[in-house]
Image (cartoon, each protein chain N blue to C red):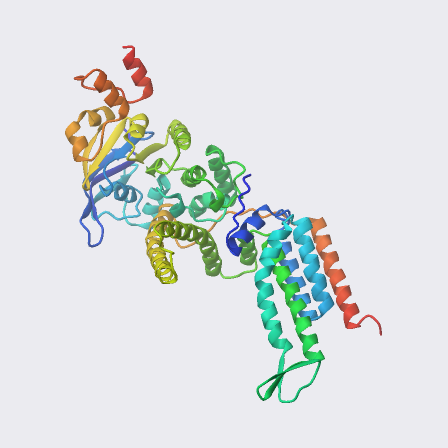
Length: 272
Length: 270
């Protein structure tokens, strides 16, 4: 069996003068997986992301990147950050440069790549996000959806194996959410593992097969989405609800162990 | 391309003007060099006609080559114009014991006078400064800030200063937006009714802005670190190339200006 791309083993972290933000967390991420990360505000989702990327140093436990343990050595950290990228919730906090092209090139330039390679990756990432012709635009004149795509291009240009997206659908209009889902599908096709933290359970149900539910810094459940939504006690404990499709199907036909999560499954289920 | 002209403060207006200027495809190095050279000549010549010539030609460049609407230029020029008028007035008036010159006014035991000398000095200074101001506006209304910073970097300005300039320029817009939202929210709750309350609300808005900047800076640093930042800010940038026709045109203008200066100084006729 091949090693998972990213593995956390009994990882704990507490912010200075705060309670434990993440407690005894063990989880592993395989190549090309799609995982939804669910839980209340402050349940530890963002801390988990920052730990995965080496921005925060675990107080206990170990992180393995493609089977190799990650130490605090600079080389290890750079390798981890190359393989694992975070798309932050607020585009404004992530966008640093004054042109779109400059912004997307920041990541690859930090990798110390030669200039032609940086240019190739920047152009490729912009094309993948449908941002051709935006290269010289200033970020302050972009719309919310465009900014989100710029922040994903940022990470894509580093050619990572795992992308962590922190509440990507917050502050996007429905049209841009649809567009984001298409983009996520394309990223999965090229083999990038995606972890998406979200409060939108309907989106999570469409997006992921596997879910991680966080509750008060602990991983309360790591299971398939069906198992998670079938567990009413867990949902209540973690402040979640069932997706509308699931609820609609359950209302029509109560007592079944599982219900459809996506529109496609719902259609099949109706004509079963 | 969306044309969103913000009619807000001068800085934002210059930024939008530069983004849509007809001269944005001219090499920023040429524009910067040209404007600085003309500015030095204009200030160095210290001559009314040269000042008027530079001011008018720069406005001409902005309107006809830069396609910048005249109303925006007038709005931009208003601020320095006011400042110039006040300072030239001070130079125009001389305070003396005895009345002399073209015009006098008695104030107590002193006289406020305008002499032909002081008049000449004030008028020269006014147009000299106007020419210089128009030069800088011609540069900043046709060249986006990032390109100017890139020119400075090539002029070997220290990397720290360049990085700071980039970050300050970027966060100017972010913080202005936060400030705008805070102000709107405060106005919606009648925070700006009456002078007393306006002052206290403005204070609170500034405080909140400061606090949110600190918070933001932490998240920003996390975002930079997660993309492998290790102490050096580097961005890719493609500036428009230098074209021979542009260079020739600039050179021709500088020669014409030099000619005018020589004529005015009487250096041409022996």
